[in-house]
Image 1 (cartoon, rainbow, N blue to C red):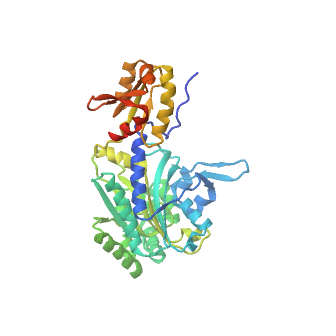
Image 2: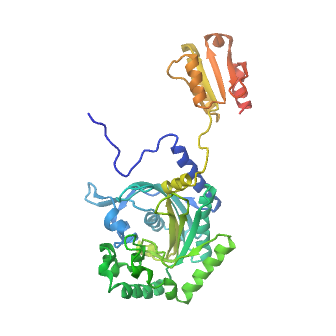
Image 3: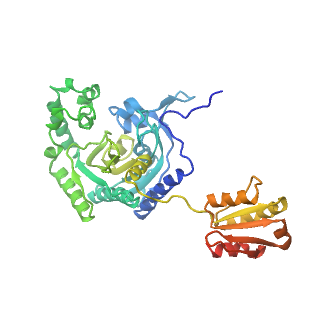
Length: 423
């Protein structure tokens, strides 16, 4: 019988690799804690309508990439393709807009699902980390969210990164720009891909994000959103840039930067990797401000800003920069057990020291002492405790310091203290 293979676009994260994931995830959590962002956990599946309304019918995510199915109650259910819609749905459901502390600052971490062509750093099931700040129109919160993202990458050791920002303007500015884009592209849209032809009327800003037609002459001559910003939008964008300057965060302004989801306006940003060999797709993180999503999902008028990135892409950037980070932790203590009576004694001692915060292991294969010592070396054990029937009869164990090679007999009731004293 043939073995069952893993589904395409997914991966097993094995011991030795999972520690790297835990390391970068903890960095993100620690920085969120410093910024007073709290964790939120939402369901892995939601009603399909949430993403149709929250992400947008005209997006590739909704049109092509969602894992959607009917449940036993004939309800349309979708595995979440991104985190923002679920977080905002929860914000509305639990009336967080009424909490005394505003803005509500949240972060999430978990698997997302998109049916797209697997490639380096992109999977059909991927782990996304994201942040949402809901309830403030202050451009300072935009700068805070951007700085939080940048500091996660810096804390992870990345040096070859750059921040790119743009403004999509308020609804008035965006409407004027939308009309200008339609007029600019309509006569030559037949030369573009089918997706762009469909986007012309539904969401023309997304034409600028097309990878297939990015070298087309009409792309290069397209009007800039910055020329269509009204006074309010221009002032907002200028203040965001001022705050980033105050935070010593370098940035580039790219008028062609748009976000792929329908609900964004004002600030949009991406963090990219400049590391050699990282790949053609350099974006690590994307985010921006949205001032209509809460209302679209049944809540009161509430603005928000957030970002998201995949853990896979962050780990790929770390590898591309050749960062030498030690993820494994040495074992505190390995018990070499010789004989069944000794094992009965060690099982209880092993549990006691583990529950006191000491990492410990013992042999479960009844191997000879030499083989057990090799196992201790593979696990980088700092200390080894040797217990045989003879030591058991005398109420002692042999404690060996693996770095110095020194060993001594220790009474059972003093073993814990001796192990701890050299940690």
